[in-house]
Every structure is written in structure tokens, then in C-alpha cells.
Image (cartoon, rainbow, N blue to C red; front, top):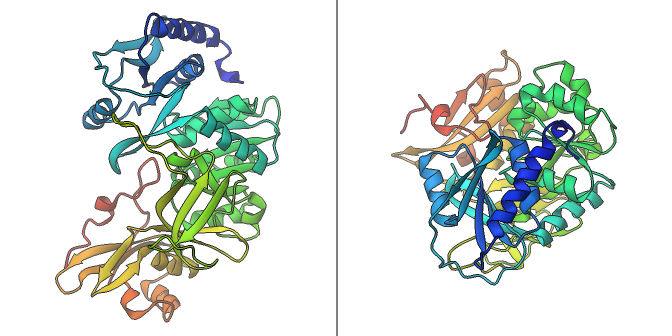
Amino acid sequence: MFPQFSASWATYFARACNLRSEIKSGSKERIRVVIRTVNEESFTALFLSLCRTDIDLFLFNPRWGRNEQGEAMAIAEPHLVLGDFNNGQFAQQRMESGSRHKTSAEGLRVMIPTGGTSGAIRFAVHNWSTLSASAYGFQSYFSTGTVRSLCVLPLYHVSGFMQLIRSILCVGQIVFARTETFAEGHALLFEESSDDCFLSVVPTQLERLLRDQKNFERLRTYQAIFVGGGPCPIGLIEECRKAKLPLALTYGMTETAAQVATLKPNEFLSGESSVGRLLPHVAVKIVDEGGEELENGDIGRIQISTSALFKGYYSVSGSDPSNVILTSDLGYINERGCLKVMGRRDRVIISGGEKINLREVELVFEDTGLVRDVVAFGLEDREWGMKLGVAYVPTESFVTEQAIKESIKGKLTNYKEPKVCLRRTALPRNEAGKLLMEELLQGAGQG
């Protein structure tokens, strides 16, 4: 299951199992444990040793800053924090925790973080029921027996963690790598078999992999390359189509244990631009602000019901899960029954009293075929309140702003035409592919 751990795995796992015995020994209270590791072998050994116990297990980002670590610790109030294996043992820190957490929960609960750099940290509560529903739904959707993954995403994040869960439940394999060690990880995963192999990346990682021409042939051998974490730049999408890479654009969230809808590679290569059809364990409605279901083709909020839905957000007072989650994402079901995501509901600005959906503007620019990447945004303005701006990366150096404006002419209502256009050689993004707006807007000015 873990081919790269063969040399040291027995030692790691044995020590993790000893820890499990120590944790449970003599305790009548439900134990709260944090896993905060950098090393994937440490994480995997700790998780597998604890996953059959009646505990609350929190996944921490080891690279959180002091404020985020403090915020997460205040929520979890753990009894024990476990870290990486070093010098024959796992790092551990025993905490003085109050006993005010009252719960009737049984079995394992996994608290997966969401938020952090984008807002207040919350922990989505999952258990084996929700995790297995997601894993087996994935297995059914892709008609695969085993699931073999090359994981280049962090294990504290739902997209990395679910790769581990799929490999465990579907009796597969998982190899861990970074973009810079992709070739070595790929060779190890494919050493035994090339069947049922999957890769998950964010757009930034995919762009970096494509800088090496040797990776194109490697990438073509996967059954699917999942790309999520937000809209993928149109130039990157077209480059992958031209190279016949098996991309699978996907939509999901921490609360749904990853994938809700996924575009299969054959549909991607035929030109479909949505995030595909729903996985078998998921149902979606598109609703208006009053909660009424809309017709196919109408844009509204995405409402999800699924057997993989989280059990609420962890808190001292417990959680009150619902059967559905009404997201802040806008979208519609197209004529082929695929989900098209139009961006977040809060990606709307009001300029001169008129609402402008920023994703709608971006799609018009993408449809010109003249930009590789584009983002629409609002700038404060004395006259308009907010004025619409667009930053773009042209497909070629000779593409002018005037040519782009001519191409979009008549496709946007007057008030949706940008008042500021910023030409860039690249749009600044972080490791997760999120746009760095402050850096992008340097020199843009305010009204």
C-alpha cells in the first residue's frame, strides 16, 4: 500500500500503535488528539494506528503561523499533540485540557480544517461513514477496482487526505511526492502497474509540471488528473487539451469529503468546459435566494445533499448537522446534465447601483481566445462606489488591449465593461493556486 515506506514503515507503525495504547490507557473521557506533521510517513502511521479508536482526531496544518495555530488549539483543546517521528519516537506534547467537552459520539471522528488564510478556521467533522461514502462513490464513478494515487497535496487538506482514505478502503497504493520530485514518485507508483492511477493537483502545480517537457508523457499515463481548488486558467486548460492530457476538472469541498462533481477526461478532451456530472452519492439542486429550485440552465446557489456530508463544524457546544448544505457558490446545470460553477456568491460587486458577477466577466474574456489567464475585481471609486477592473495575461505578446476590447464588444452590458485593464505577464498566485490580490493590484490605483 505504501511502497516508498518499505524500509522504515514497521518501526513507525509499531511505535504509533504503542502510542495508541498509551493514549487510551485508563481514560474514561473521549480523547482529543492533534496530528501536526510535515512528514507523510509520520502522518500515515499515526492515522492508521488511531483510526479504529473512539477519539476525536484533529488534522493541523504544520505551517500555520502563530495566530492560526493558537486559533486552532483554542477550538480543539486537545489532550495530546503528535508530531513527526525523530530519534526513535514521535514528538508529543501533552496538554492541560478541561473536561467540558460533552459528546455522545462513538467511533472515530476526524476534524478536517477549512478556512485559515482565507478566514476564520473551522473544523468539518467527518467519520468513517462520510469518508467511506466519498471513497466508494469515487470508485463507482470511475469504474475502478483499486485506487492508486500519486499524492502531491498535503495530508491535512481534504484533497490530500481523501487520497489516503481511497487507497486504504479500495485496497490500493499511494505514493507521496512534491512537484520537484514528481518524476521519482511517478516511477515508483507505476513500477508495479499502470492501471487505475490518479493524480490530484491545483492549477499552480500543474503549470509547474508542464514546464518540463518530459512530464507530458508521464501525465498522459494517468486515468485522470484531477484539477480543483478554483477556476483553472483558460490558457492552461487549452494547453492540456492540445497535449491530450487526461484532465478531470472537479468541484468539491471539505464539508463534502472532496469531490461532488467531476468532468471525465474523455469529456474534457472533447471540449466540455464544466466540472462534469455528479458522483453517484451526490444530489445537487440549483436554488434562488428564497430556496426555490430553478430550472436547468438558470444560475443560482448550489445546494448539495450527499451521504458524504460532514456532521457539522466542531465546537464546544457540539454540532447540529443538516441533510444538505447550501453553498456560497453560484452555478447551473447545462443541457448535458453537467454542473457549471460560476464562482462564489460574494464575487459580485455593485458599480453605479448595478450588480456585476465577476466570474461572468472573466468567462467573456476567456471566450475570446486571446488571454491565458484573467481575473475580474472591484476597486473603490468615488464616482461609482466600486469600479470594475480586469487583469489578464495575453496568449501572445502581440495581442493588444484594443484587440481584446474589440473581441468582447457587444458581449457585455455597458456597465459590465471594465474601467481598468491591467496587462500582466503572469497573475501572482500562492502554492494553493489562490490569487494574491494585493500583489496583483500594486499600481492599479483607486478612484
